[in-house]
Length: 167
Image (tube, rainbow, N blue to C red; front, top):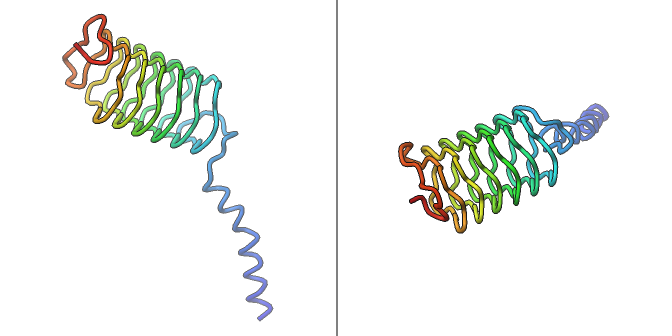
């Protein structure tokens, strides 16, 4: 009986350590595969960072700077990045379903095969962005600047002055 109680006690002591390993660590530096799920990173600067395959689900990145960052294959579902700067960033294959990217800047960004279903891109700057193969069902482009953007078919380039719709 004592041996069983001792084993149970040891298991209970190690449980928080094991659980902590599975939880997001908001203090982790930017790196491929980082787990920033539900972290608040408002106003932070991650220019040029490599966050390939990172878990950014439900993250808050309002007014953050991710210029030239690599965000390929990230899980950014329901992320909030209001007014953030993704100029020249690579979000190829990212899952941004249900994210709020209102007023964000994606000028020259690569959004190839990015899942933007039900994403808010209200007044976003997508000038010269590449949206080849992006999934846009239910995306809100109200007031978004699409001038020079390559549309989902990979051949159509939106004309200068395209706002809210690729013309």
